[in-house]
Length: 172
Ligand SMILES: [Zn+2]
Image (cartoon, protein in one colour):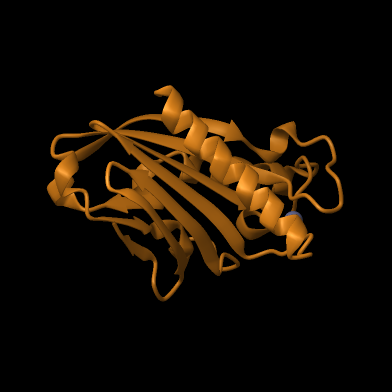
């Protein structure tokens, strides 16, 4: 990933964290984050959700039932087609899916922080100029997820939206 994209993604995360503190919502569930960047033909999307929204807990899985639920969720999220839909005209093909964070690495977190699952999806797009929408399909699988803070950075600038179960598509 190019440095400016990395920088913008970082800024987005830092800003989101700052908002969380400023608005004194230390531990709100139901809200995930979706951050996307288009750089040339490469579309990078990062999805980050509180463990509570995905598997119902935010600590390292302990029981065999928790391990199973966690492993199944990570596998589900590991398939981009389960999580995201990019408008077909852009011809984006999924390349690498990088699992950045799961609860398996969770060794206890501060009360005001979630134990999160975070994945990064990298696409190569045949017609990046036709990129028009990204839909968050994961709402269908995880009923606790109620909204997602969406931010997109591309050649035309930024798009910021709140996606919900009823409006899961972000026009770009
Ligand atoms: Zn939490």
